[in-house]
Image (cartoon, rainbow, N blue to C red):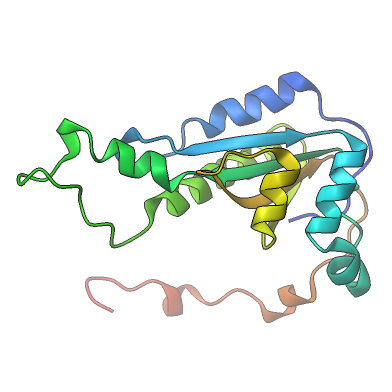
Length: 186
């Protein structure tokens, strides 16, 4: 995660390559219940930065305004409805004709996987990225005219990296592999 970007725009062909790769993310039943709003307009980026609380939260903690100042934002959205619709199709119904149970909301897993592809594709293109979750969902939907059945999950800031202030959370360090990985049983 980078929290400061150069102002140079991200060329459309780079955006297309990044999002083209994101289309290859896994999706339960090949539901593909994701959509993205690409925002490059400066005024709209500022409005999104305000919705994301960058002045009150990030800038007050000495971070840059890495939402509004990034040359490009991608608002990642997931549609639970598209998963339910897909799993009501004949090839996905249970033997009794009902939709499967959803012990895990895979629409969120899938958009998370797609976002990771976006992060990695941006790095592959020589860019950097940062992620902020959307907490003011209805306001974001209104601002960007996002359809009702899509949920804006997060905002990905993308641009060429500039001098950055590292998050103090990094001082925690990574958990050792032995605490995270369990073989055969926990």
